[in-house]
Length: 263
Image 1: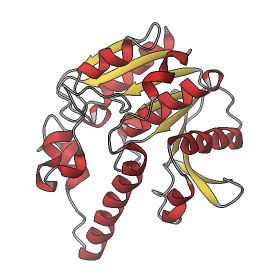
Image 2: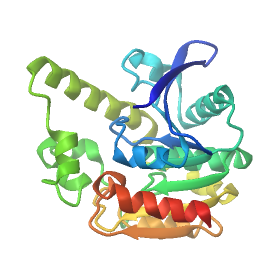
Image 3: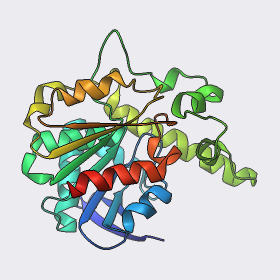
Image 4: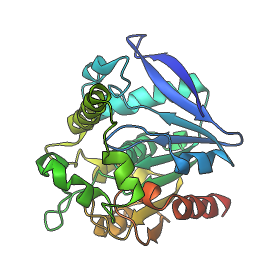
């Protein structure tokens, strides 16, 4: 299991909660919309790298109001710069999924020297009127697993959507799920286009774009939208996977990342 480090940030107003495991070169992982879950994918990464998985502001249950101190996406990028400073990581490998991918892309575009290599797993951040990103807030909660997973009855989906048997724990888990979504919503909507398209050409890090072939949240056409804006970006499509590709196909996702990082 990872160790947990709390870093004071934002002039000490709150703390960044960082889960750390493994050994080797530094990998920073930025999670998606519904919070951080340490899973077999991160375990796999930790076999070769020191993984720093950072909880987005507000998703740390000890400081849920921290998200209110950040005005927008640019504040969030500055927050992550402070975290990397605190961890003494000048230019780590950065892996971001979904909303975390959007933040990772913003970090690499705003501060190109800050990111050694970049892996974006089905990132948000761009927008096409003819192929819009699904607004998860408008999806019937009973249908959400069908949007996020290739197999909504599979192990990965059940792990995410099956509540604890204890009613109080189930209510708390539901609250965390909704609050994590709300924390992402603050930085994403009304549409997930905060001008990244105007900055993304500044990304200098070698970049891998990893997508599930059956992503129903962020259509696969966005893989090419990102690729044509990031010089030299590679695209890898994973079969039998939806938006949570690293959870449905953790071994395949990890191996593709390992291959990219060795090249």
